[in-house]
Image (cartoon, rainbow over all chains, first blue to last red; front, side):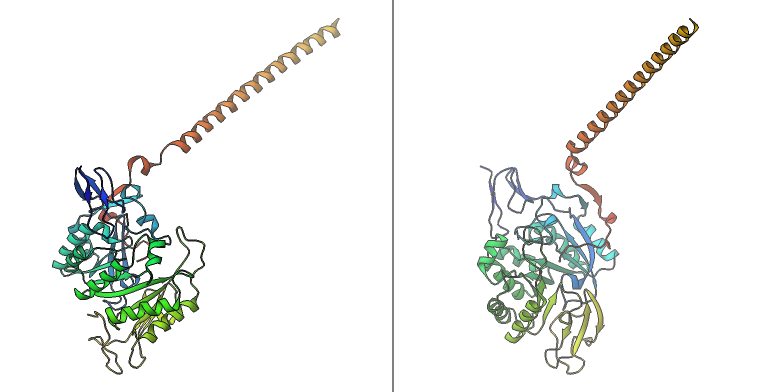
Length: 326
Length: 76
């Protein structure tokens, strides 16, 4: 009996010798748990920070973004399924990139930050941790773009080397998680609270899918929870759904639904609520919650106008704007 | 006599031409058959042989060879 239990995420996969966990990339080799994609990303890009999306964390800066194959969730609407719903051996290409090389490349390409993103970086935890540790020691920031389906102990350890997260809160409904993602809601909420407690800058994304999670009463409950547990200054991004992967039967989210969701969240008291995946919408921009001055005007992922003061305040009423600006 | 000889000659020439034509036709058919055979084999091999990355796994590249600024449609 050489079975191992992976304690990284709430699945607690019992992996027989020679087998893999639910994520496909964490395997049992001779009774030892191994992460097969360590140092072997399949996606490597330099993106604008706004693409993560992070709107209140070093805006307008480039960020080196890496991902390996695999994921511990299996969302039917996954936009990155060709990467996340496959094992490393099924990739077209992989890069040989040990942690020091990743950090060297980030510095060489003038990136201040590294993002662990695209698939869920939880499944390449050891690679993230060791890269982030080196990056932090060399003055870089670490950004974790995740669905946060992770256990508390490994997350607390990881938070020591993280600076910011965009966490995907898929719905404020456990049934949605079970039916569409093969996960559950509570661990995600716990992880969000852990990020906040550990001083990691948090922004939340909610992909609004017609008929599945666009109920306004649920959106109100979610916004209240964010306000009470994470703070009214936590940016919330309502993102437009596009038919994808195994969920092609539903139409893209109507603009009107996104606008209503945004209004609900603002009525509840959240200060910074954005609409994403909808190019050119006014709600891509940041407004002062006190006097309504437009502080940052965005077009897609690009900053067209930046009016914040150096210390992150509204230039008109001097209201402090939540975020990490410098 | 002459006429009958000429006829015989003509007939024999015609028969030679016919046999040459038949031989050419046969040769063409063989050639086309062979060509179809080769094409069919190639198609069969192409369909059933594993693709490069299936046979050998993913292409491995050093990190510095990544096209960092190549447009992509990955979310996040």
